[in-house]
Length: 307
Ligand SMILES: [Zn+2]
Image 1 (tube, helix red, strand yellow):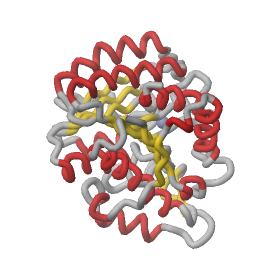
Image 2 (cartoon, rainbow, N blue to C red):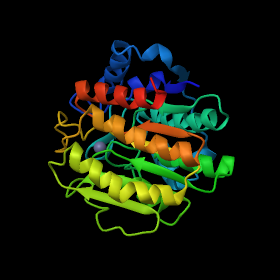
Image 3 (cartoon, helix red, strand yellow):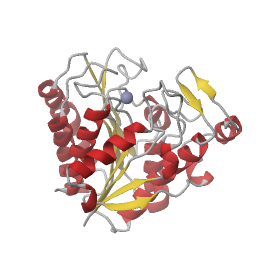
Image 4 (cartoon, protein in one colour):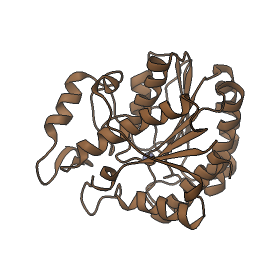
């Protein structure tokens, strides 16, 4: 079965200013690399549908959804935090990013595709139930995980967040829901400056110092995440797939390379094969150096597609 590649034209229209690193060029870089690596034609290409309000309400407060909708500008930009702003297309893109996440769950659960990658913008893992931050508006991976639980009756899922920043929004949303295991590796101390002290049955935070390279990363992942993931026996797995820990990405100071992202993907695919009939949905989060983002995402997708 193929891997789905889900995107939407609105993802290229949301911008936060020409200077902003979270730019439409990121998705073009991934597309270009998939073509160059001869992967593009082996994927099942789908256009995201908009999320339904009821699907957002599983992880966001009604008042917050109303707030984001009301903040959508007719022209120009409307800043919700110092580095997170809306243009006239942002609301549409955010709705399709979360909707693409739901669509990915649907297609994978129905067995139409083996797994799915959603090349979405805006990203989601910093968005909490009631706050936009860190380039994020709706928490796409949380919407996806909640959909798997509530619409498909799954009892246990797991999210592996390998973005270089901690998935604080995802942790906050599921902090009281042991059905969702969150495993988050992140540079510490670093933005968003939370997560290092969390100790919980189902929140597995792995803070790592600046300068962490693949060898140390893999050792930490193997020792601290794999046993917890196996014990949780997730029936579906999700990636918050951020590639800003690449050594060429100067947003942060990790030293990961493409082979490390392929390795992470394969580790989690092993867990999925054992417990989840292979079901994986991966959602793009960060990654700001265009060349290494394209190469890393392609390595991740190539592993997912077993090409
Ligand atoms: Zn990040």
